[in-house]
Picture 1: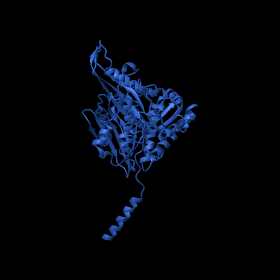
Picture 2: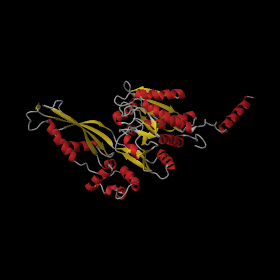
Picture 3: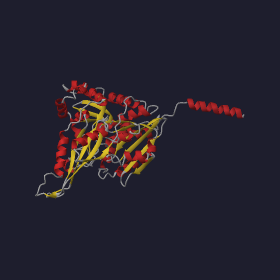
Picture 4: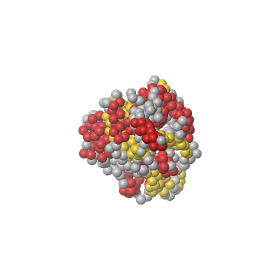
Length: 470
C-alpha cells in the first residue's frame, strides 16, 4: 500500500505538471487607458517642483495606488521630503528590468502659461501641466504597465521593478544616485533599465523615434578670479572682474576639436533620409564634413542639438561679482555648463580648459559623470524597435545620442544596459514645453503609450501573452 500511494502521487504530480496553466485574469485595456489619463492628471497636481522637490508627496501618490492594488513597495527618503519609491514583480532568472522615471519637475512661471501649471487640465485633447512631458507621463505609462502585469498575474521570465525617484533635475544625488549608493541590493539582479531620454517626434505627420543609448557627459565648472578690491570711482589697471571677462572671452573664442564618434555616426546616418539636402548627404558621413568650420556653423544654425553632438561644448551661464555697484570686488566667479562627448578623457579636457583660461583663473569641478554607451545588440532593443515600428510602420527608428543627461548614467556605471525611451510621438510644436511654457501631452499619446509600453514588457518579460488578442 505505501508503494501504491507513492506511484499515485507521482502520477498526480505528472498530471499536474502537464496540465494547462490556469488562465490569467483578462485585461481591459480601454479601462486601463482611462485610468492612466486620470492618474496623469492627478499626478501633475502633486507639487514636486525642484527646488525644493518634495518628492515624498509624489511617492505617497504612488503608494496610495499600490495600497489599493495590494502591491508591496518600499519608500525611502534621502533627506526630509526627498522621497523615492519602488515596487517589484518577481519573475524568473533572466536579468530583471527597472522602469524608471523621476518625480521632480522644474519650476513654472504661471504668468506665461495659459492654464495653471499644476492643474492637469484636459482641454481639446491635451493634458496640460508641468511634468506632462518631463517625466510624469513616462511614469504613468510605467505604472499602468506594471499594474497590468500585476492584475493579470502574468508569469514573468524576469523581475520587473517600478521605480520613481527624486532630484533628477538637479543631478539625481537625492534620488537615483542615492539609491545606487545606499540601497545597492535593489539592483543586484537587474540587467536592463528603461528611462527618459528617447522617444518619438511628429513633424507634420512624419514620425521619427530614437532610443537613447548614450549621452554627452556633463562637467559643470566654477571659475574664480581674485584681485585687489577698491572703490568703483578709481578704476585699477586690472582687477578680478576684468581678469574674468578677459578669460571668458578667450574661452568663448576657443573651439574644441570636432569629431564624429561611432554612436553619433550611427545616429546621424540613421536620420539622414529624414532631412533635406545638403544634410541628407552630409549626415550619411558627417565625419567627412566636421573639419570644415563653415559647415559646422551652418549645422549649428540649422540644428543646434545635432551640432552639439559633434564636439565638446560649453555655455557660460552664470557670473557673480560685487554685491554693490560702487565696490570693486576682491573675487568674482563664473559658472560654465560643459558637455563632453562620451569618449572624452575628462582630465585631458580640463588641461585644455585651464590652458585657455590662463593661470589666474581657478577651476573647480562642481559635477562630472563617467561616460558609458549601452549596446544595441540586446533583446530589449530589438523588442522596443519591433513594437514601435508595428505601431508606426513608416517611422524612422535609430539609436540616439542626447546632448543632455539623465539618471541613466548611474546605472550604466553598474553595468546595467540602460535605454532612454518613452512610447509617445510628441508633435513638434509641443516639444518646447519641456522646461518651457504650456507643457502638455496629447491624450492620444497617453492612451497609445499605455498599449505600446505594455506590449514591450509583455514580449520582453512575460512567459505568455497577457491576453490572446492583445
